[in-house]
Length: 351
Image (cartoon, rainbow, N blue to C red):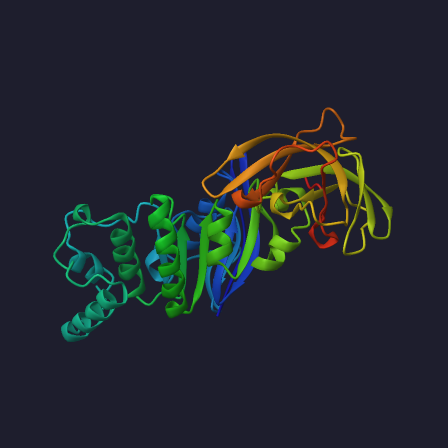
C-alpha cells in the first residue's frame, strides 16, 4: 500500500508545495511550527482542498485537480488523530468508540469489535467513563480506538504527544509504536520533536517553508542530514562555514581548524557540523586545543561551552554534551577535544 501526494496551496504569504510518496509503516514529517505540516495532513484528509495537484491512496484517487476529483473526508478511508483527540465530551468511552463503527449494522459484530479494541487499548473497566474522567493517555487511546475500528487505509497523527507531560509522553510513545505495528498500514506522524520522530518513524521527511526538502530513512537522516537545515532540525548545535581543501578535508572557517571527514567532500559544501555528543578528549583525530567556558547543568548530563583557540571572535561558542560522571574536573590550559571523521557532518546551505 502506498500514499502519493503532490499538491500546492496558496495561503497568501505562505505557499504549500508538497510532493512525496509514503509506503507501509510510519513516515514522520518533522519541521518547525508554521512550516505547513498540519496543513499537509488536512489536505490529505480532505478537511482542506489544495489548489492543484493530486493525492492517491492504494491506487484510489482522493484528489485530482485536473480530473476534478475531490472525495469527501468520510469517503477517503483516512483516520485522523487530532492534537486534542476530538472526543465527544457528552459520550462515554463505549459510545465514542462505537461512533467509529456506525456503518456496521450487525450489533453482535459491533460488540465484538468494541471488546477487541477495549482490550487492545487497555481500556477495560473504563467503558462508562466520560472523556473528562480520563487521563490524557487514556483519552489518546480512546481516540485511536475510535479511528482504528473503522479500518482506515491511512492513519494521520497530528502532534499526538503535544498535550502530554514528559513522563506520559515517553510511556505512550512505546505504546503507540506497538499499536502502529498492529495497524500495519501507511501512517504519517507530524511532529516538531526530533526524539519522537526518531523513536516512532521508519523514515522522516524534513519540512521547511511549506516544502519537503529531504526524505530519508530515519537513522540515515540523523547520520547524514546533508543540509544545514536538516542537521539543525535533527538536533545539531555546532556549525561552521566551510570550504573544501582536500578530497576528505575541509577548513572550518569559523573555528579556525581543518577537519578530516569519513567520506569525500563535495565541491558545493558550505558548512560543517558536529553534534554536541561527538566530542571527546581521548579522540586523537581532528583534535585541537580548546578553551572551556561555562556550563549548563541538566539532570543527567552537562553542556560545556567551549571555543577553539583560533576561533573567529564573532563565531558562537560550541556545545559539548557529556554525562555528569565524565565532566572534566577543573580547567587545564592545554585541554583539547577531538572528534571522529565519521562524526563530521558535511553540509550544504539551502535557502
